[in-house]
Length: 107
Length: 121
Image 1: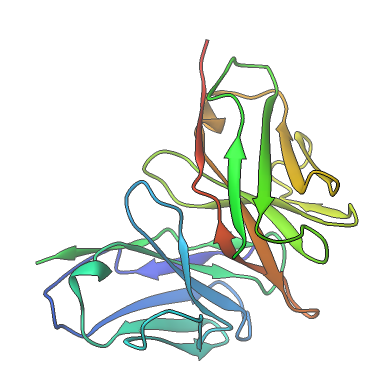
Image 2 (image 1 turned 30 degrees about the vertical axis):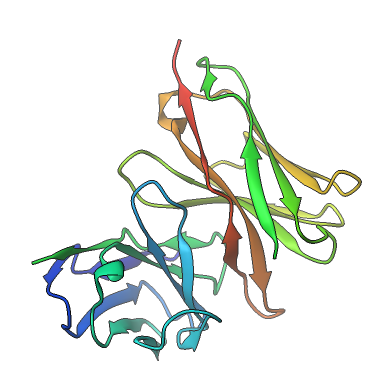
């Protein structure tokens, strides 16, 4: 199985900050990576697919980059609605696997 | 807009079979892949498997011996059965539409709201 490791596990930031979350794969996954946002008690919401393709309706302050084994999710200017947990997911090969999550909290 | 809704018992006894159904509304179940994903309380996400509308399946090897996913196109539903459950199977179970590319696997959108299944006697 491909292991996905996110860092940091928890990130404290303020409204207006630029933040970056990193996801590393245990082997190359090309650009087959998705990012999700999950709020407490809710289902995950797709933000990014194919490493850098912004899902329709997702604000442009979210962006993704990377290929191979290292990927980043960047939020250019944090908004109050962005405080949540973020997960990466590889779909290069089965079984599909997720990172352990990064909790973004208010500083 | 496609919406998914999970349904099924919220409490299952150890050693019994967990059964859930996902009803798809606002669109046809045909021509898509459909998945089950679970999340133990306070933990991360685990992919369980997918089914294509034609009936072909792919399961996570960690669960393969206990999992069956089936589809009923006439009802626009797909279902999950997980046998011989233990407390470790306690989780929120999500159904989701699996988007795919021919040369790789699936990413997921949209998701159902999720249903908590507790395994306890």
